[in-house]
Image (cartoon, rainbow, N blue to C red):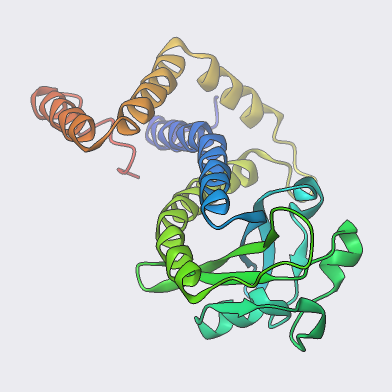
Length: 257
């Protein structure tokens, strides 16, 4: 890449490596969110569950993940700022149980119109991470045939506990997504300029054996981290020891931009 100095090329290479690690994490995170919703929905005897997150700076929400009969139709649907049960929970920070969605003034019926689903009972609770509300976790209807029993106060308390786990996964997903979007902008066309040389360089970086091995290591670390606290601690200590005694440790840090 003739127009890029050695220092800049090194920094860009590290950025690409960081972005690609983020990409290896994004799909597993969404899968984990979906699996967690399945388990918790079963605990609450709920037919449908979904996670909505902030979309842009205006307070709109969009469905990040969902399970149930119309899950695929919900993904990326948006709820305007302040609309619906989810909008109220997001803006107020208060959980909410609705026994009759059709009779609830704040219910946003447009989602049902788009999916063909009939929402009757809802349990919605905020997703909080580091003191900030980052989304909403919703459970809809019961398993079986209507009329559905409303969600109980005890189930609302359970949902709040489930929300803590979901919020951690959503926060990790959002961080990975930010890096991924940065990479797309850096390697995409802009204003009609020719970036083919840049794209060719990116392809060569990603095809390099060192880069492929780095991604393999990232996947292995992710697998170890999923095994438990003891495994995570052991992994942390081993990696820390390698970095401490490696002459290249500080030079290759992904955070040294």
